[in-house]
Image 1: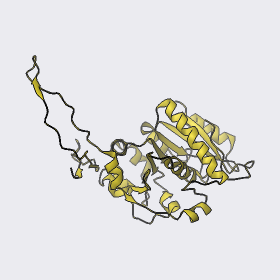
Image 2: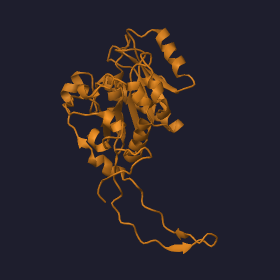
Image 3: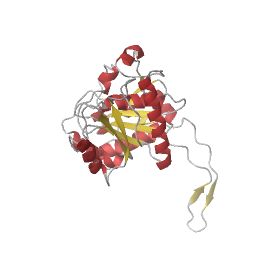
Image 4: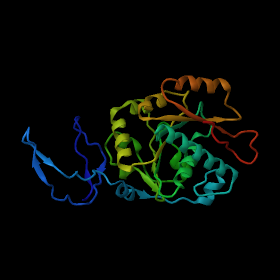
Length: 289
């Protein structure tokens, strides 16, 4: 089966996501009539609508200079660096917490700007993706100030807003690193970011993305929680939030303000202390979950 555009929605717009079928022909079905209604009953199941393996293969692969990225604090490959080890520990603790709750959609945010949330989100995503035969998605949802593409050195013109609005299919805007990490990057700032996240089109696009890619974990890099309402706007599409704090600047009052903001809305999975003064071997400490 070839890739086809998904059917129109009730509002007349396409969901903007290609349908990758199983590629298998449908075997003849044994048919028998329902004795009460006279309708036909098919004894065999219909084939699955999506084949995630084929969707993953459709994503354009990107390359990155791992040596230069390590010098900038990114660990795209396994490393014995103490900070890389801290992210591996964070990965394991995160997976344990997600397994206990049956969660997979995690927001990474911070109280204010400059806490290093995008670097934490990116390193965590790469740590998760280093697991063999895993599937992890990292999405840049700091729509006003997207920077993950720049962090990774990706120079492609990528418009995540077009995907969220249903104007472009998933494979046009997503990229793939290796075989286990899908990247929803963005190089076009969106001025009406909060309104975009409130839009039902965004909810539809994210649900379809999860259905097609079938990831174990989705990491959303979101703006600082105290800066705007973007995190709350995306709340219905999230399972939990990971809070990144800066050991040199984040105040206890800011952490408490975030906890109050999340309370009753989005579960707080843990806190990552970045640039901790007592962690002289590296920049990060693992989360307290």
